[in-house]
Amino acid sequence: MIKRSLKYLIIAAVNVSILTAMLLLWTDKLQITYNFLILPIEFLKILGFSLVSLISMRVLINYFRKKNIISITSKIKIASLLTFLISSYLYIDYSSRIIRNRIIDGEFRARVADKIKKTGRLNGTKADSLTIEEYKAIAKTVPFPQIPGEAENIGYSYDFDGLLPDYYFSLTYEIPKKIEIDTMNYHKPHFFKYQTFEVIGDKKKVIYNEIQQ
View 1 (cartoon, rainbow, N blue to C red):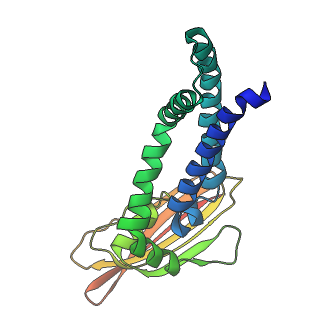
View 2 (cartoon, rainbow, N blue to C red; view 1 turned 180 degrees about the vertical axis):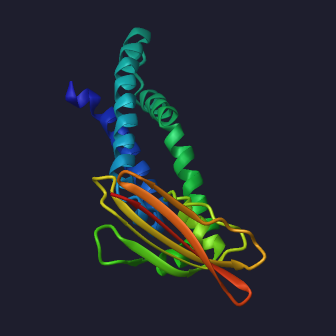
């Protein structure tokens, strides 16, 4: 039984290997910095799709028997095609991420990742002198607040627990003095955020803090 099923297990194993390699390609340093669970979560998805393909191949074996298909080559081709079709979502998703993260934006994302430093606290990161494009790249990975497109000299510090919802986020940036900016002082139990600014020459320096305890 095992011997007869070996070729299908090999097909499933090859599928897992290819998808895992693709996963490791698109999860660059910038991605992992803010989502350290991305690798185990995505790998579980790969295993889930592969389990479905194995179950489908088991149904396919019964089909081969009913149709009296005995050609090993035909069985392997059909089983491989079925496995690919079931996992096609991951192949398409991972391919697009590889193209975007490694080919199109590879150098840019690496430059942003190099600016990010550890704060010395649990899961803490910080960065200074970010451009608006660099800040937006980070904000696509972690839900940082939106800021004006004219912002420059952006700096942040972000510490979070990882298991508990507690976190501390601090953000500073400069905008032209003519741009209107609101101040804020919001409080509720275990959470508060505030925003202030000061005028320095022809710039406004905005200071934003958000804390969940």
